[in-house]
Length: 332
Ligand SMILES: NC(=O)c1ccc[n+]([C@@H]2O[C@H](COP(=O)([O-])OP(=O)(O)OC[C@H]3O[C@@H](n4cnc5c(N)ncnc54)[C@H](OP(=O)(O)O)[C@@H]3O)[C@@H](O)[C@H]2O)c1
Image (cartoon, rainbow, N blue to C red; front, side, top):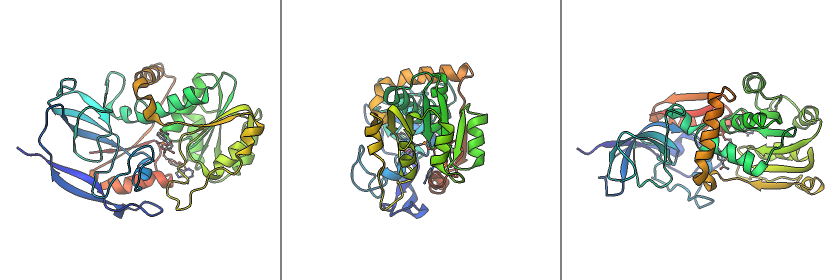
């Protein structure tokens, strides 16, 4: 029997702020399984800020989504049919399986989810791609040392909260920048941050000077724009600036880079970028450490879960207006 697949496809390359009408819900038959392939029934879809960049035409570190193609997402589910020697029916997996009910895969880039380490949804968040971004971006690129100050923008999101908690475990002073009093309270009262700056209601540069009296040794940037310039103004000697994302610029028709870049020179620091895919072969390291920290009560995670593929477009938009509070997920 041929299965019918419901999927969210790209209807138009967004101009400026992404709109619901840039995406469309469609149905299509699931193609027959070939040797070396398996079929996944997606249970949860991850909504990640990078999707906005992937909707642009052209190629950056990954090919842009073409009009009519399923929206590229990390998704997690169970294998229901397999002609692949390494993937068995009943196994839970996650990877770039798309905003759809069913996904065919040849196993490239697919990770088996060890449910003993946490529920499937965590494998799209703290134990998944965003958790790995935080782990390797901070530890491999930021190289935090005990006693140093780590400043994080976009701090209340899944990457930011994971970075901050790892930095605390490594003995750092941790300051987060987030939008609104609720997210700032969450950072200091639930995520163990030492201080938080509300960029929507405070002067960010003054907040950084006040909360980072010894200046900033590691700036982990998820936001870009003016917040990046403010952080560059207050770097300690030898500071490391990790560019992870620039969500303030993703929907801009005229994105701008840092104006204060010469501060890197006076601080004898460096700016570096991180792309999580480069660490694929080391994910097990990050997954093992993070799950151990969670089970030891040293780390926590928060999820923001919606339901129904038809709600994918409206849910995605929440990321770019700060309406999500925790890892944004959609149950299929
Ligand atoms: N380099 C990589 O390999 C890689 C991998 C994964 C993620 N990332 C990047 O990591 C960053 C965080 O991702 P995430 O999954 O943890 O998302 P998230 O923080 O859970 O959600 C996005 C948050 O960004 C903030 N935001 C939205 N528009 C903003 C603006 N104009 N100015 C300032 N903040 C804004 C909002 O928080 P507020 O309410 O606080 O404004 C929103 O809740 C993103 O930039 C993403 O692209 C990079």
